[in-house]
Image (cartoon, rainbow, N blue to C red; front, side):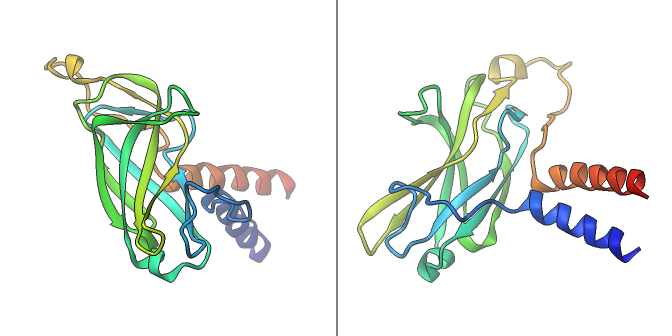
Length: 181
């Protein structure tokens, strides 16, 4: 039974944490050497306009000023990944960096697209520069044109949080452990 618990624990740790071993690049690294790795939304996930969206991130580096600061998040267009653009009404809110999560709602005013990303913004007072980190590309459907229908179903979020992936990982680990014994 102890082996089984260890396997589950290892499976969760592997899935839930981002890789902080690589450099975040110059646009995402603070003057103190900190940065965010945005974990969710996951790549190719799909969200419904007006529905729930859970952002999760890992804090990398050891910038204590950054860890205690507030960072803002928005949905941005990544149609051209070399030129990610803020969109009108894409704001999702702010959170303290060290918290690592923000639960909010997809704005209803944004258009349907399969090329959105999360953009985090932090003003580094030491360098007097804005620091931007970006997440995976995901889709939003059900923009305001279709939300006026009274027969529309409730909002659906696919893989909206780390717990969704952890649940899948636990299921896979349990299946693998069962087959191994």
